[in-house]
Length: 253
Figure 1 (cartoon, helix red, strand yellow):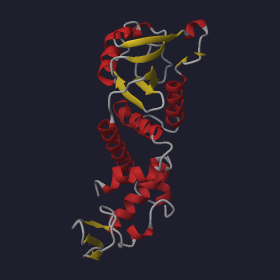
Figure 2: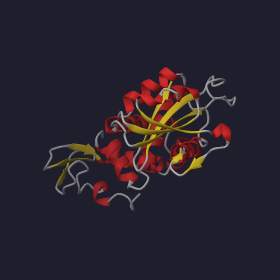
Figure 3: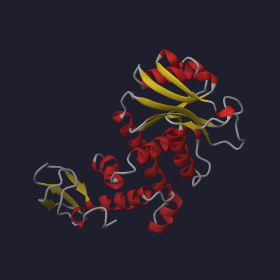
């Protein structure tokens, strides 16, 4: 953890809010900044940072609790709070996507492998839009009916974009929003020049590889786990720990 966050924070010399030196000590290991006038507990900061560091490394809550000798319930709650804060951040960061867009759905959870649009009982249905040379945006949807997908596409993309999908019938009306290119997987078509959805399928692989570590995710929590994957994917070439620190700790401690 010392490699990703300065010891000056933990020693009570540098403020985690304004990033300036000049703290004075209060009772119960609390400090107050003479610049921004905010105060916080060094004991709580240390605990939060230890838990956040394991979350950043994608260690399970159970293993984190064991490694840190913390109560499992505490760690699990903090991990879920981190995910909810990440989801809020992703939603605030979201904008209408445009340009070349890849669209696809995927299924998560459940014991029985579901067919597309059918047999998806007990599974969370995720819809994803990937902006080439940009970011991915995901939402959990109730079903894969045409009206459901068209509503999501209209709210999340700009008209005049170029859309790439497979041949699923629910995408048939996409031409109302822009140019629609279809990749016919049922005819063994997977990629021809720009005509592919390899980007969004790569994101699903990225997400599912990480979901395999979890067992028995409650269906109502899938939106938060999915947003965590969206966040990690979109910021995979950045300093993810510093972003997590800002989103999950600095704004809320």
